[in-house]
Length: 53
Image (cartoon, rainbow, N blue to C red; front, side):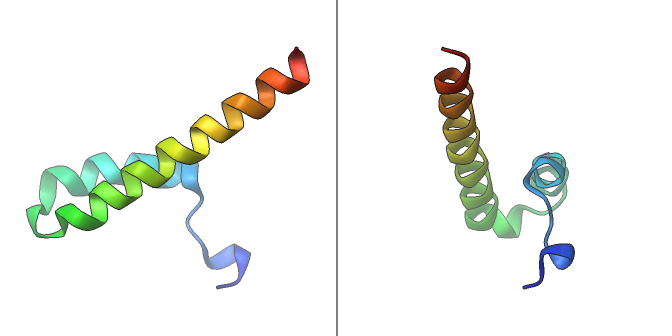
């Protein structure tokens, strides 16, 4: 998928909560999105720590 067609992860975080409240049929997809966001956030935090430390 071209970069301009992808949903940015920061924007995706907002959608996770919205869809979680409105569509219970996609719980597996929501859990995957939440895990992906948290994993990437952890990686970014670790990289920032290495750069500032």
